[in-house]
Amino acid sequence: MDQQQFKIQGGSLEKSLKGETQLDLKTIATEAWSLSRNTKTAVLHGVLLLFFIAIVFAWGLSKLGFSDVNTIPPNMMLTLKLAGIILSTPIIATMFLLGISHSVGIKPKFSTILKNLIGSVLLILLALLLAALADVSSLLGSQISVVLGVAVLFYVNLATGFAIMLLVEKKLAPSQCVLQSMQVFHKYWLPISIYYILYYLCLFLGMFSLGFAYIWIIPFFINMKGILYRELFGVKVRIVKVQSNPDETVFHA
Image (cartoon, rainbow, N blue to C red; front, side):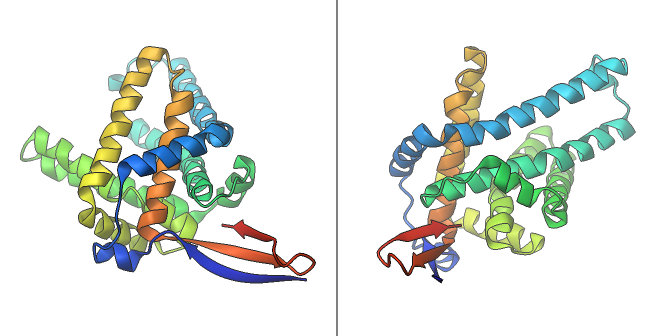
């Protein structure tokens, strides 16, 4: 019979809110690159699925005669956005949970995590909440100036960037996920912002490789975000000690 115990790896919310967590982006990036050497395949499953969904949407629009996004009626655009959120959110959440798992030495299968997340009502509600929060905030900001609207949108996306990870890893309520993500962002806005700026910059530069660079870029940044999450919030893992071999310890997310 197995004896189960739980342990927190990494930091904690309490320490992060006090500003006691030390983030060394260079060290985190080095660890993420090392992890990505053996974990690219699982993350790329999600990338391929998202690419497939985008292709299907583009094909459907072309069949309906919409070659230009600007010609799509507002009602249809809203429907497409909602459909995109519902279809893509479980995949994105799976990739995030893969990054968290890799950060604590676990290498789960993409399909196993996806099966557990598909159909999660709370996950979809959170994704819709984040989209609404970003849209409304950006709209209000743009009433003053376009630059402010873009800045507010960028801020909301960054500040809530750990919300989905908090839901799938800690099973918090959607509102609590948003609140905790924003609280920690305000304490560590500089290193987190640098992470996102580098990520978007690499995505932009990756286009010049016809997308081939994404094979390394996306898994690297997913793992890096998983490590950031581990250090800022901590990851609860289950330690399973097999009685037949008490020295053998296996970690599970």
